[in-house]
Length: 255
Length: 346
Image (tube, rainbow over all chains, first blue to last red; front, side, top):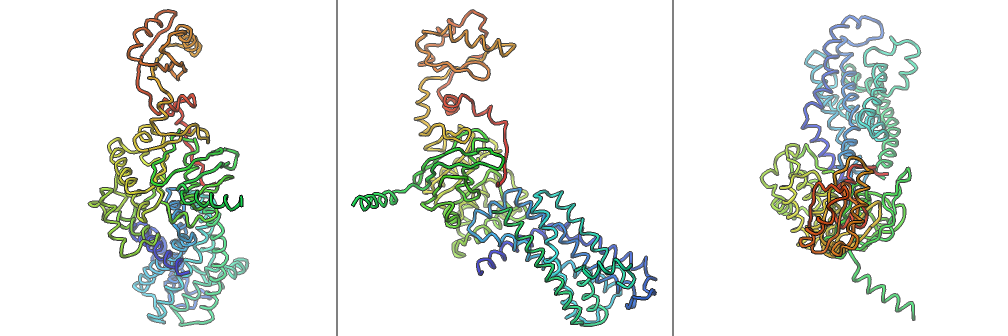
């Protein structure tokens, strides 16, 4: 256990530095949600008058969705890093050392908490600068970042599994695109009351919406234990399913 | 009583056990390719042993099995007395492996690359920095240690990769085509570094398709082809089995039939000419094994005058490992290189 933790720390630090040293990684990830935040909050400003919105402005409604959206985008390609190590021999180099092989996977997963929280922070700060409010203050902000980090780890499996199974960068990239509609079908853009009936049903099973709702409460209404609990539960289920699949695919690759 | 004596004998054997011990190793990939087809050999402590053969001969597969990256279909392999199948984790502690594809992290500096592998291998913190300095000097990387590896030349990456394999002072170092893709100058430099690693007591197991490399570095080699060891011995011994000087005749012919006609013509015309011990066909003509070739060539050329034999070029040389390979397999290593194929882990 201590061995795995130490190895995960060493490999996680490498993964973090690899991310941080290529600014293109986070610039390209943040570009899309930032544009959506700035543009949509102006373009659809008047949508807030429709019934179902409880916030003071569409910007306040949109911000939590874009935070989660940034995390969603940020982890959509992370499986490819492991694939690159597989193809260039680095994974073999690690496999020849006497470490626990699961540390290699954890070393990719754990730093996602930090990188996702950092990307979430950029969107959060931007939306506050644009005029969104944060009623829960610093503790609420930390809560938002923590939820974002956890969501990043739980969602990353959707990138790891296609990458590890196909062993092909392009295939992995296009397979993770299949998850895109889920982000648009969430409550990132409109509340559930404004959705057609069938979408409301889908939304009940969409983990992304639960994370967004908990964060939205932290920004505009206050600490809501019920919503935070639901978000944690949704992420726990997501985590168990995606991690089980990821560990299976990883073991298969490195047997 | 018998069993007791037997047991004592076994113990004596164990004490003098070789560092690498491979018995009847077989690897069949999915799809039926027999990459390794019943290979057995042993390597003694401190030895520099090499597998020489063309690409696709099963060299990489063998070395990956020994380094615990691949499971054999059957047979057994022990490294440092430890079974690679039963205790792969312990084998990993004893060995270093520099792979054919240089595996270094391009976004980290040279020193960071070494620190990470050193810590993962649990080199004690009190020794690690000193050990890294030592290896940077050995691999002539001290000045570039703080540069990101993505900026290194091919030779520097190779040397860094080799350094990461040496951090924990492995008993055995596996080298898979260590100078592949290097220019002659870097190759020579790397050979010197490998020799000094071996001098410090590390047992070396190398695969290569460069005869000069095997000749220069290895005290003992096994020539491999199509998954089998064809012959094994010291380079000098193997060359002695070829015995004579090698005279290569390149023939000018417009068609394969014509080439074949000239070959059999040569066979007939040299019948009973004593210095010629053996005639073999080579891709562009024939290869003659001739004793004291320098003295025999004038008469040899005279005999081949006529009957439409058109000699385009005549070269002679002392036997090389390529001639050894040719003698035992009927092929040259070079013509076999076309078929490069990495089959992955399965």
